[in-house]
Image (cartoon, rainbow, N blue to C red; front, side, top):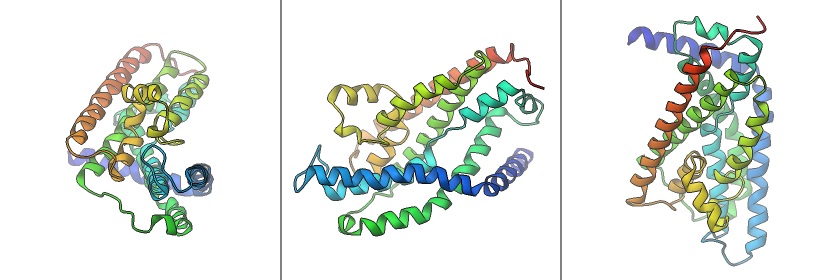
Amino acid sequence: MLASIRKWLAFFVVYFKDGMAYRVNGVIWILTDAFTMFTMPLVWTSAMGSSSIAGFHKGDIVKYYLAMLMVSGFVVCHFMWELAIEIKEGQFSAQLVRPISVYQVYFLRNFSWRIIRMTLCVPFLLLFMWFYRGALTGTSFYWGWEFWVSLLLGHLLSFTTVMMLGFIALFVEEAMALFELYYFPMLFLSGQVVPLAMLPGWAQSLAKYLPFYYTTNLPVDVGIGRVVGSQIFTVLFVQLFYIVVTFGVSKLLWAKGLRQFSGVGL
């Protein structure tokens, strides 16, 4: 166990330094997400006027997007692009000879970037809170254990889902188009663009049967108090279920795809 921990720390430090070397790129990526989170409350508060929409008042909708900015920055993984490129160009061969699981390598690489991203995101969070300080007056956020558990499980679910998608590149030469198809339902059904409660009933039902909601929208709903009581245990169980399913499928793709991986590009 101590040997494993030392290896994890070594890989984490290497990838953390690598991420810090390209922190300007990170700020640019954060800006793309922050722009949506900054502007959408303006749209919704103008639309609702003095009333409410789907149970959201002005303060609620601002709190929702503030929470989504924080949660998505930690939860959402995108490294299937890197994984697919490394498989296609043969760089993935280096992962096969390392004395550590490929899952651990990509988890540590991704997790180090999540830490950097959250650090770089702090100024944007403070700016968001200052800009919407009037709407946030009198609102509160729930920081109980349920929120932290749902946040961690949401991150693990996003990680296993992305690993599953990335391993598709072991079977097809060009997997990028499939990743593009993944982003459209993911952005809408995970609540990153519009709160799930504001979507049509059929879309809400669809989201609850797919894993997208359980990555980002669920931790946000727990944090702003829209999922409470015994409901929390049910949705946490669903998160665990989808983690097991996506991890199992990724292991199956890994086992079968590795047999035909030829290291093209070396």
